[in-house]
Amino acid sequence: MQDKQGAPKWWRGLLLLWWLWGPGLALAGQICQTGLAQQAVDARWQRQDVQTVLDKQTGLVWQACGWGLTGAACQQGQLQRLTWPQAQELVYRLNQQAWGGANRWRLPSMAELTSLVRGGCLRPSIDLRVFPNTPSLWFWSDGGEAETGADRAYLDFTTGWPGVDDPQLANAVRLVRSPAP
Image 1 (tube, one colour):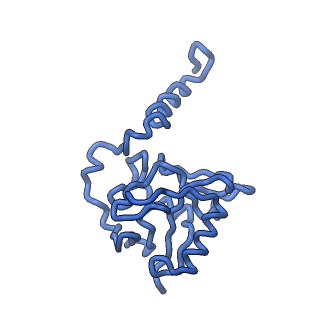
Image 2 (tube, helix red, strand yellow):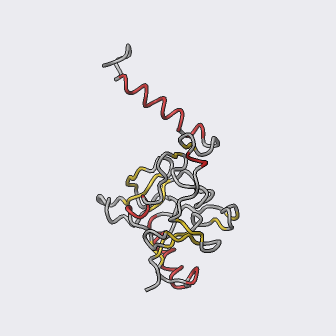
Image 3 (cartoon, rainbow, N blue to C red):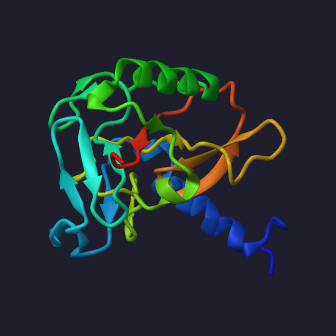
């Protein structure tokens, strides 16, 4: 079905969604289904310290803040957006320094990164009580699953959907590590 201008009718709906969730409302804050924000924090998450969060379901340890941010509410510092090669260099450096007392840091797989998505929430699609001040940006994954040509995989925390991007463009980073052996 088409409108008077010849465009498909679904196109108007898509434009409306973009207008509601697009860049024009960047300051509107997170949008969650009614009642979802009042639910208790999922018991799978345990804040270990200011820097890390334990996923008790998988045993993975996550950076609590996107790279560049620090503090209990991730309000200190400035989020650093890195190219994919810069993110790989960051991983190497942090492991050399044993950042956070560990040297097993890495970019998460897409499946691991997707496990952070909080269904029913957008802008960002993550539980801000567990991962505070997470921006609605693209976050790099290790690129293993969705690698197409020279592109690398990311997860868009605006919607919780994956995609691929040019590795020379800068995106946000949240690192993960496996538990100690």
